[in-house]
Length: 408
Image (cartoon, rainbow, N blue to C red; front, side):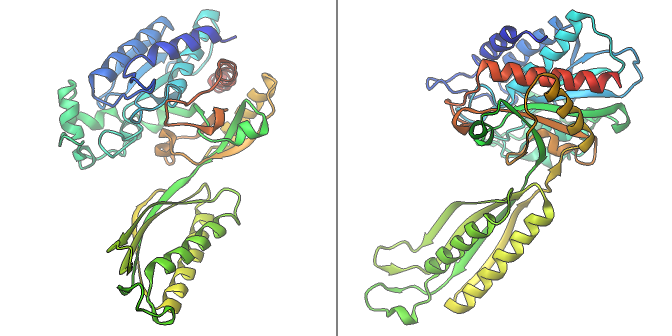
C-alpha cells in the first residue's frame, strides 16, 4: 500500500543537503545543512497529516493522532545526521519510511487506536561532537548536562551549538517523554553488513543490538638493538601483541555473534633496527549477549596474561567504553514476523553489530528493528546503496508492523 516512488524521491531530495563532490553527504547536527534538511522533512510530515514540532534537544517529531488520544504512542524513528562523507540511506531511510507509513494511513483513512509519532533524532552519529545519540538520550530522560559539554573540533560544545540553533540547553530535560505514554519503538534501517545479501534476502528481523566494549591494551617490553640482541633473551612487546591478537580473533570465531576488531596500533620507538619498547592497540569487542561478551573478554584476558608471563613483558588493560547490549523485544519481534509473512518475505533473524538510537530505550520501552539489504555491505561511504525495491519492501513491513501495534 505504500508509495514506493514517493519514498524514493524523498530520499533523493533529502540527500541534496550536505552533498559533497564525492557524492557522499556531510550533514552534522545543529548546522545550516541540518536545519534545511529538517525543514524539508517537516514539510513531508505536514503533507502526511501530522502535527509537527521540535523538542528541547532538537528532535523533529511528527504526530498522527489515534482514536484514543490518551493511549500510549507507537514511535517510529531514526536520524538524518551523517558521518563525514556518508551515505544517503543510513538513518534517513528510517525517518522517510516512518513518514510514508503515517501518510499511507492518512490517505487510506485507516483508523487506529494508538497515536503514531515519527522521530528524526538529533545527532545519532556523534560525528561532530564525538558523542552520539543525543536526541534519543533526551527522549529517554537519560541525557545529562555534563554530556552537553562535549565539544567539536572548533571547541564549540553541544550546549553552545544548541543555543546558536535557537534551543535553550538548560531546558534539555523537557525532551523527556514519560514511559507510560509510549507503547513501543520500531525502526527501519539498512543492515550496513552483508548477511542479508549473502542469503539473498531483502529484509531481516533484528534480534538485538550489540554493545561495544572498547579497550586499550598496552604491552611494555625492553628496547634493544635489532642485530645484537639474541632472540632467546628478548622482551619484545610487539611479538607478544601479535600472539594476543591471533588469539583474540580465534576466540571471537567460537561464538556466532561475537566480533573483535583491532582498530589502532602504536609501536614505540618505531625504529627499523630497534626492538620495540612498548606497543598499544585498541580492541572493539561486541556481542548482542552480554554474558557471551564477558566470556570472550575473560578468555582473551587470561590468555594475554599468560603470554605476558611467558615473554616477560608487562600488560596493562584500560576500559575506554563499555555499553550494554540491547535485546529487541520478543513481542515486537513476533509482530514483525507476522508482517514479514503478510508481505511474503521470508522471516530471518540477525543481530545488529552497529549501534542505533534504540539502544537508549533499553530500560524505557520495548524496541524492534527491521533491516534491509545493503549492497556489498557498504555503509558510512558514498557508495552506500540499497535498491528502491528493498527500501519499498522494508517500508511495507514497517507499515504492517506499526498498524498491528497501533490497533491492538
